[in-house]
Length: 94
Figure (cartoon, rainbow, N blue to C red):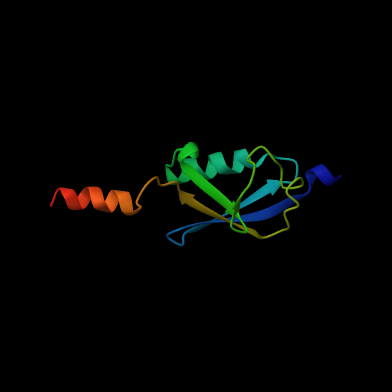
């Protein structure tokens, strides 16, 4: 039965740490993301997860995303700002 098939999903953070998960093809990716964030002590809403450089819907399953075994997902903390405006504000206080 296809719903019982599992695949390996590798999640790699910006610091190069990688965690490997086994996930059923009919399980929402939000469960994997929640577990990863719990392990890393991240808040799920502050993290970005990318597949081939693009964000993907967390409510989709590996089957819906057409994921293959041993797929790599990139994980990173979301950051706001950091552009030239932040630099110029810092320069005003020197």
